[in-house]
Image 1: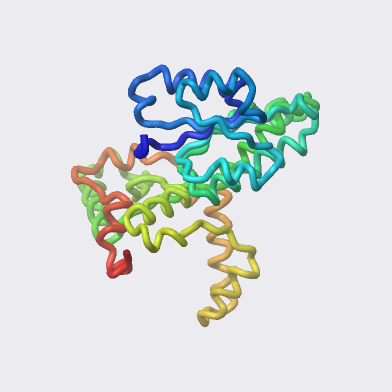
Image 2 (image 1 turned 60 degrees about the vertical axis):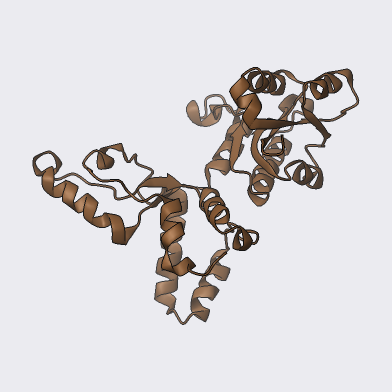
Length: 279
């Protein structure tokens, strides 16, 4: 039990949350891997007590309370989150609730956030149906969550040559094509989690933080970087955040030309000279 990963489920006594809990507990493999922490308004109610009898830890938390949500996320590995537009019929409130969940999940070190979303009807119909608020508000939260753009990572010293070699040996099929040199995409949260796994002491204080433009540039200025370089690097980071380093393109075609294994992020971190002596 102590080694199980904590999976937080919102709406534990409702239809969606209840279905998630039943699916996880109904499979011996996932039931053994995960301990479920169900979020409900009143753990004393019969439905919550029935979940507790099945091994679910039922926790009272108001979705509008950051402190209560943060407490519920303590030590959690994964979160299934949902919101109920129909309770107040207020799209801005639902967006705020969803963003708070996303922010607190990141702050708490949650490695996997599963958001119960819907499509943005206004965008999908080019404005023909702008009033389907309970769709659009959830889609807005989804877009906010996706703002943590995955970053393509590569061990330059180890793996650049493997890609160039692959290009040389696949000349006829690759002329005029672009090869994306990366082992995989990692979100900033995943990068921090990998670092913390390898270096638990240093990892206690490691976190992903987005900085305002003036703060970011000031840090570069303090390091002696000229204003032009500050602006260039800021725009570089802003571009990556909004559009993705490789335009969010897939890596399968680029990997297909390789005949050697690439270093994973974890392998790179474990041997990087920059981390020598870190614990």
